[in-house]
Image (cartoon, rainbow, N blue to C red; front, side, top):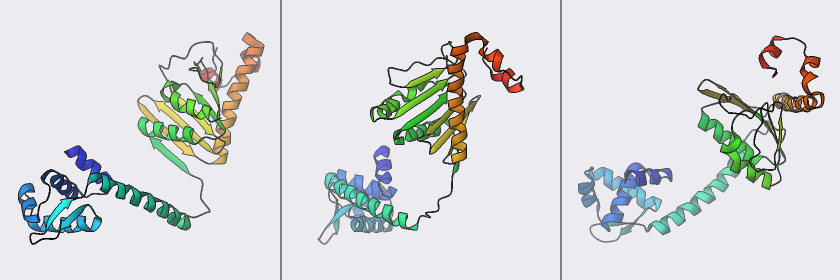
Length: 261
């Protein structure tokens, strides 16, 4: 019962309207007095709610002396609601486009929480049209289906990870620097660029996951260059093999912390 009430509220019913609608479906025709008694609500609340529901098209009024009401057939009602929702959505989209500032400013959105970030990530993948660059040490198996759909519609996906990643049977270009298989035990980062117009940076420190989503072109270029540089370095390392890192070191704190030996 509570689940149905919540779902009705999600499509526009007020809670009292949802309760009355369900009750009328169970009882059939009824008047305000009987409903007030059945639901233990005041008659004024019931009568006012029934009047609003009648105007909204949720119930039918039977014209007789007791002013009885009947719940509109659910199939008919929701067919009408779907049509109304669709038409309103189209009109609202047009109206909002007229008032939207065309000189849109660049955005930097801070993201918190794994579910929120995953939803954002999947949304970016589903909207990518040409190329997707990813630098990560997270397990991509969790988003395999979305990556497959993107590849099937012609998106080129380029992935870098310091350790080896499995391509999961997908036509992805995967690059790595180390021959060690990625264990995903201490996953800490996602750097992603979609079509060179959207960038996502995600970090995980302990149990806290946070991220930044932006369309700032400088930020996007920095992430893109970082991913490309990692790939170039991995390729050069294979060419020069064991001597590569020794030849290119400049002896910084960053190297001591991050270079893989």
